[in-house]
Structure formats: C-alpha cells, structure tokens
Image (cartoon, rainbow over all chains, first blue to last red):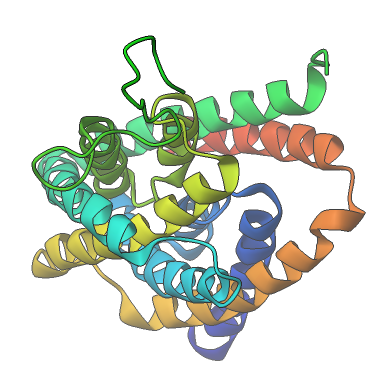
Length: 128
Length: 137
C-alpha cells in the first residue's frame, strides 16, 4: 500500500481500533501492532514505536473526557505514570536489544493471552 | 474500618510511600510501563486489573488512573524508540485521527451491545492474530 490509499486504510483501521478500545478497553496496541506488521509491512520495532505514538494522543483525549466528567486524579496519575515511565524506557530498551523475530514471538504470546482472557470472559458463566 | 485500638485503617486506597505513591502503585506502574515499552501497547491491560485486585481501586478510578499514567509511559516509550529511529510519524497521525473518533463511537455503543458475545468473538479473533504473527516469516 502506498500514498493516499495507505493513509485512508490507516485512518479507517484507526476508527476500528478506537471502537474496540472504547467498547472493551482493549484494542489499541493489541490491534494496531499486528495490523502495522502484517498489513502495512512495518518491522516489529517500527510497529510498536508507531503504536505508542497513536496511544499517546488517544490517552490524552480520553483523560480530558474523563476530567470533564470529574473522574480521575491528575496528580496521582502523573506520579504513578512517572514510575511507569522508568519501566517503559527499560521495556523499550529490552525490545530494541531483541531481534525482530524474537520480539514478534513475544508479542504473539501476549496477544494469545489477551485473546484467551477475552474468550473466557465472554464464554464462562460466573455466578452473579 | 477501625480496629479495636481505634486506629483508622484505610481500606480503599493504598498507603503512600516515599514518592507519595503506595508501594503497590510503584510496582504496578513499573510493570505496566515495562510491558508498554516492550510491546508497544498501553499497559492498561495489566494496570487496570492489578489496581482493582491489589491496590483496591474501584473499576472506574482504576481505569482513570491507568489512562492518566499511560500519558507519561507512552512519552517515555516514544522517546526511547524515537532515538533509535523507529517511530513512523505519518502513519501514527493517520491512525490516531481515526482512533480518537472511534473511541467516542465505541463508548457511545457500549450500552447497546452484547458485551459477552463481543468479547468471545474478539478473543477468538486475537487468537487467530497470535497464530498469524507467530508463524509468519
């Protein structure tokens, strides 16, 4: 895919990923990374990096929407997030140190775990 | 909740440590951040359940805290991958413009769908995606 077609496809897929994450709380990176590697042809590392740049504005928009409804504690989230940022640098450095094929297998394992959890949530009847 | 000695015990939120954030939050944040950086995802998938089960947050507060934390977490990940030259800005802008619109649509649809069926279908779809990713060369 190239040019206008590529960007139109990316925009449409973004809508789908957004709907999934709005509905299920899952579906941002879990969907975008496979799409970018399998359909668009980015490398595993490029896909993950690009996915994070999509997640940032989406999280900002969602946080602002929650704030308007009075949900959340910005100070707590930022301090909590700063600890997370240290973890993120370490995680990204680990990813960059791994060959793409290994990282893709790790990612596939993660997607499988998420898939199994959703299937279980959807299928298993729990007592109320 | 008060014990016999009369000392109030905070049951709904964790105690604050030396960073003004409880130890549980430090561990959950570090874990969520590491997963986010390693896999290019938000990290909410581990942070929300852990905030509920371990740090005793309500579902809604856990969701809000996780979303807010994803902002500095993703900035750190983007910077690390960016220095390595891996970030593709054009595709990210196209995806993000769709995704912000889609998230609003999804939240609006929330009340009108069979969530269990959707979860089962989406779970099966993700398993297929996992197989495709694992076996593609």
